[in-house]
Length: 315
Image 1 (cartoon, rainbow, N blue to C red):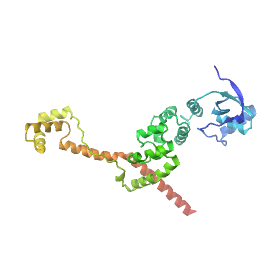
Image 2: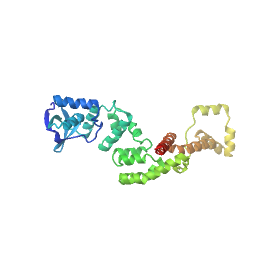
Image 3: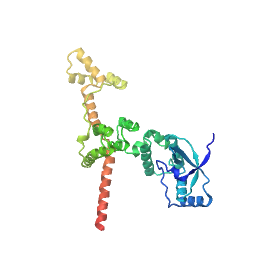
Image 4: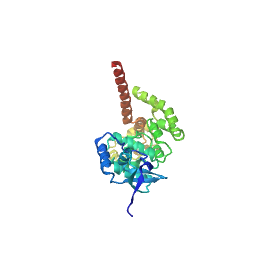
């Protein structure tokens, strides 16, 4: 059944809960629209949805703004019952934010959308914006947040603002503060974590990061050598004598289990390689990219402070 157009008092229509694109009354396009409505009236109905005894604009906010500025008593509207998700899709299409919006504006809009519609997950929003699934995490500074904590943001257990602040910490500290992110009010949590983030940035600047590494006990892992390696050793017989000497094998049984250790990468040399890899992995808790991004942010703040100081001196 096609939607019917009806005239609704302008005073009963509210602007959208989330403004994806602010109405700039100074630009030529808006002024031309307002002048056209003043001369010829509004011929394209505004899409609204009922909200109690009032209505909320879904598509046509710029037209509604012009009508209110012109003090028109009523405007033609299409009234349609819509869920938050349906209204959001219509707003995205109306504002053409998929293609016609700059990256900074998209970031701001994404933040507003997630705050306004907590029931819609970040991957869902990315899909509506025709962006990759991890785009929202990157734009909102959540790239370094543990996966399980991202899920808590999506289901609403961690407020978005608290999640963004938590994501500024290295993962070792995220585990310590996640309960506070869940249970504390956003402002109190940000006040709690802000000095910790500041200390971390200072440590990055001074390259004193030992406290932020995840400490895990080393445990060697058995995995079978490649068939090519085994065949090569069987044919060339290069390592057997050395392995038996290192293991101080005295019986046939000692020799058998020494051989198994080598096949399973549990001989002394293989274990040492695993240990070196483990030590390197400790530093991956704070990834190279995170260190670079954090250091760049620190330097950018310093440059900004230096510029402001120079500017004030000139004045």
